[in-house]
Length: 94
Image 1 (tube, rainbow, N blue to C red):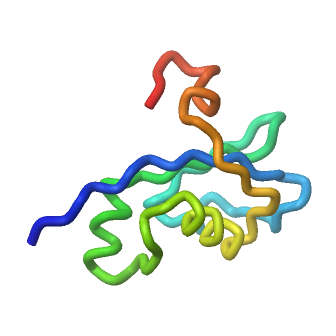
Image 2 (image 1 turned 90 degrees about the vertical axis):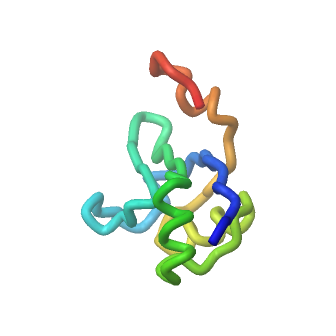
Protein backbone atom coordinates (compact mmCIF):
# COMPACT_ATOMS: atom_id res chain seq x y z
CA UNK A 1 0.00 0.00 0.00
CA UNK A 2 1.39 3.42 -0.98
CA UNK A 3 0.55 6.63 0.81
CA UNK A 4 1.84 10.16 0.64
CA UNK A 5 4.28 11.16 3.29
CA UNK A 6 2.91 13.92 5.51
CA UNK A 7 4.46 17.31 5.99
CA UNK A 8 6.09 18.76 9.06
CA UNK A 9 3.74 21.37 10.54
CA UNK A 10 5.08 23.82 13.10
CA UNK A 11 3.14 25.75 15.76
CA UNK A 12 3.53 27.95 18.78
CA UNK A 13 1.12 27.85 21.72
CA UNK A 14 0.75 29.81 24.95
CA UNK A 15 2.05 28.02 28.01
CA UNK A 16 0.27 30.50 30.28
CA UNK A 17 -3.19 29.72 28.88
CA UNK A 18 -2.76 26.05 27.99
CA UNK A 19 -3.78 23.20 30.23
CA UNK A 20 -0.84 21.72 32.12
CA UNK A 21 1.01 19.59 29.56
CA UNK A 22 2.93 16.56 30.77
CA UNK A 23 5.63 15.49 28.30
CA UNK A 24 4.99 11.80 28.94
CA UNK A 25 1.41 12.18 27.63
CA UNK A 26 2.43 13.76 24.32
CA UNK A 27 1.91 11.33 21.41
CA UNK A 28 5.03 10.22 19.55
CA UNK A 29 3.87 11.99 16.38
CA UNK A 30 4.37 15.36 18.10
CA UNK A 31 7.51 17.04 19.34
CA UNK A 32 6.94 19.65 22.05
CA UNK A 33 9.41 22.00 23.69
CA UNK A 34 8.92 25.12 25.75
CA UNK A 35 10.83 28.35 26.09
CA UNK A 36 10.17 31.96 27.08
CA UNK A 37 7.82 32.35 24.07
CA UNK A 38 5.64 29.40 25.08
CA UNK A 39 5.36 25.95 23.56
CA UNK A 40 6.98 25.09 20.25
CA UNK A 41 5.32 22.13 18.59
CA UNK A 42 6.01 20.30 15.37
CA UNK A 43 4.62 17.18 13.81
CA UNK A 44 6.74 14.09 13.14
CA UNK A 45 5.32 12.89 9.80
CA UNK A 46 7.10 9.53 9.60
CA UNK A 47 5.37 8.53 12.85
CA UNK A 48 2.06 10.29 12.10
CA UNK A 49 1.79 8.53 8.71
CA UNK A 50 2.14 5.10 10.33
CA UNK A 51 -0.31 6.05 13.10
CA UNK A 52 -2.84 7.08 10.43
CA UNK A 53 -2.45 3.76 8.58
CA UNK A 54 -2.92 1.86 11.86
CA UNK A 55 -5.98 3.96 12.77
CA UNK A 56 -4.39 5.50 15.88
CA UNK A 57 -4.50 9.02 14.40
CA UNK A 58 -7.64 10.07 12.61
CA UNK A 59 -7.01 13.59 11.37
CA UNK A 60 -6.30 14.85 7.89
CA UNK A 61 -2.82 16.08 7.09
CA UNK A 62 -3.45 19.84 7.04
CA UNK A 63 -2.43 22.79 9.18
CA UNK A 64 -6.03 23.47 10.27
CA UNK A 65 -6.61 19.85 11.26
CA UNK A 66 -3.39 19.75 13.29
CA UNK A 67 -4.29 23.07 14.97
CA UNK A 68 -7.66 21.66 16.04
CA UNK A 69 -6.00 18.47 17.24
CA UNK A 70 -3.51 20.43 19.36
CA UNK A 71 -6.35 22.46 20.88
CA UNK A 72 -8.11 19.20 21.76
CA UNK A 73 -4.97 18.20 23.70
CA UNK A 74 -5.23 21.38 25.82
CA UNK A 75 -2.93 23.77 23.95
CA UNK A 76 -4.28 27.32 23.69
CA UNK A 77 -3.55 30.20 21.28
CA UNK A 78 -2.16 27.70 18.78
CA UNK A 79 -0.57 29.56 15.87
CA UNK A 80 1.00 28.00 12.77
CA UNK A 81 4.55 29.23 12.12
CA UNK A 82 7.17 28.68 9.44
CA UNK A 83 9.74 26.05 10.34
CA UNK A 84 12.53 28.57 9.82
CA UNK A 85 10.98 30.80 12.50
CA UNK A 86 10.56 27.92 14.91
CA UNK A 87 14.11 26.67 14.56
CA UNK A 88 15.89 30.03 14.29
CA UNK A 89 17.71 29.36 17.59
CA UNK A 90 19.03 26.00 16.40
CA UNK A 91 21.73 25.22 13.87
CA UNK A 92 19.34 23.46 11.49
CA UNK A 93 16.06 24.12 9.78
CA UNK A 94 13.36 21.97 8.26
